[in-house]
Amino acid sequence: MNLKELFGYEGKNVVITGAASGMSKSAAELLLELGANVYAIDKNEIDLPVKEKFQVDLSNKEEIDTLIEQLPEKIDALFLCHGIAAFPGRELLVQKVNFYSQKYMTEKLLDRISDHGSVTFISSVGGFGWQQVYNQCVELINLPTWENAMKWYEEHSKLIESAYVFAKQCLESYVTYKCMSKEFIDRRIRLNAINPGDTTTGLTEDFNRSTSPNGDIKEGEEMISNIFLKSWNGYAAEPKNMGYPLVVVGSDICSYMSGQLIYIDFGLTSTWTSGALLQANQKSIEEISRESNE
Image (cartoon, rainbow, N blue to C red; front, top):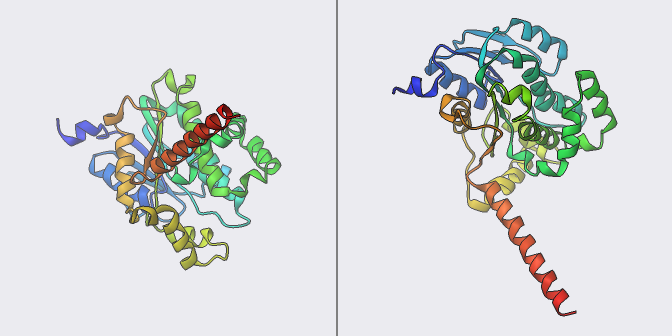
């Protein structure tokens, strides 16, 4: 079997957002190499030789609706990869771009996705701990319209103050909540997300600036390094380190995989989980010991 047959994209229609740069652009380049008919979407200009390209503001429902009318009637794989950094005053914008537009597009395009097709998101290690807000995320997911969701955001302004984090937590909750819902499972449409660790992209300066309380790029860079890299003397990933696995997840190679949140962070979040479990176990041992001595 050759590689194109193994991946299963040759001659297939693939829709991918965020394709002007970064991880999504790396993914789109690989999809082209694998013979896919790539329909690429971004707010910025796309310079790849794709089947068709669209410049769209994916925070705008009307523009998304127009885009949907122009996309092919049959889609074999959908990759939703667009996202922005969070800054004060942009909390609602971040929710629209980083989560709600992705949910909206998935559900609007679902009837066009082939049986045994795939939907794959780029989320983030920033959504780690999504279980803590799962009920709120599911409440939002179950709202029937875009307008209902915007009203919900207005009523939960405190919750979305952690704008980037909450949006990614919603995305990860969506994958786990919906992967075996009737509309997906009856047609064996797979739903997964990759969760990148620190990656150098065109958004890196924005993320550095938004991480710093003072909006200082250097301070933000140091803070991100301390969180994601310093503990293991690590290094930032390149876009292809995320874009290539993304293509694998959406391909026939992973045809039996759905509902997965795949952390691509060199094991960092596993050590967070391990540390939390060890701490919890130690606390339980101490409590048992204290109770037995009373």
